[in-house]
Length: 107
Image (cartoon, rainbow, N blue to C red):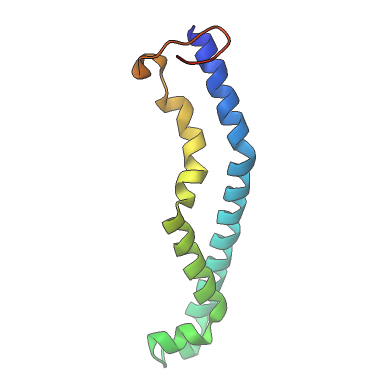
């Protein structure tokens, strides 16, 4: 019975992989854009001479990518990226106190 549960869990996690891959790529692209924008923002000599909000206004690439990254985290991208890899470690048939038939269906 435990093998059927593991097989069913493997099927479930494998169907999440394409979506997880897309979310990981989005997170990587936005993170690289934010890091690149931050580097350009920090090495700009005018950043020290103007106010904080003026410096953000002068660097729209950094501002937009940073706001996008924060928005993605508030939307739960960290759960969508990490959760599928955590399922196999956190799932145990005895924890759920359910019956698992040989076909993999749970009762």
